[in-house]
Image (cartoon, rainbow, N blue to C red; front, top):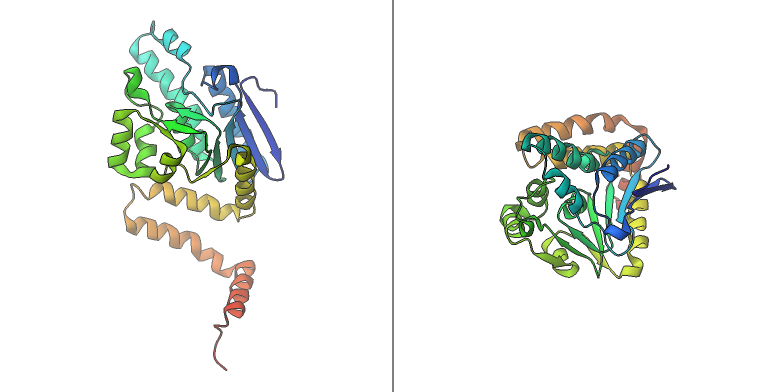
Length: 260
């Protein structure tokens, strides 16, 4: 694929999507938004079964490009509002991917860049990485679904704390808080992320899709609806010969068959 602001590679069922504006700390531009959305559409129609998202150079993503903010200053608020919804939506399409997504946070993830990492299913970080939802430090309220994403990851109290302070957290502290799922030495980050993605890629893709859908709905749907959806998705699997073989294998392994 011929992109200017991102790079996309697919190998052995794993797509690697890299934000590629290292001279701008991978800041998000309108061009990147369009290319990112295009890449996700291509990945969704490919044979990729997992995706790794990372940044080129020293940063993961510095958030929205400040030069874009200057351009919006001369527009009427309704036009800016529409532009922001389209801009953020282009990146947050990653939430709609049916395959597992792994953020490999190689450096600073700031503002909308932090939201992009938070939108992935798993977040591995280098020891040198940091993350901060720093909108308030620019005198602007959070965007790109920050409240929604943080609420899912760390709960309402922590979400408010992170958004009101705008603190930039080092990797170890972010890990303790639940923002990062794993922290590894910088030189081991991509291999750890790829290893995780390859393991996820070997899972049943239909089950991964259902898990992601139900997990997203869990925050807003009552338990009875979640149970009904789980049962609906599980019921056809019990007649699957592959599933039956796995059950039989597990019974034999555990020695819990019917007594003689």
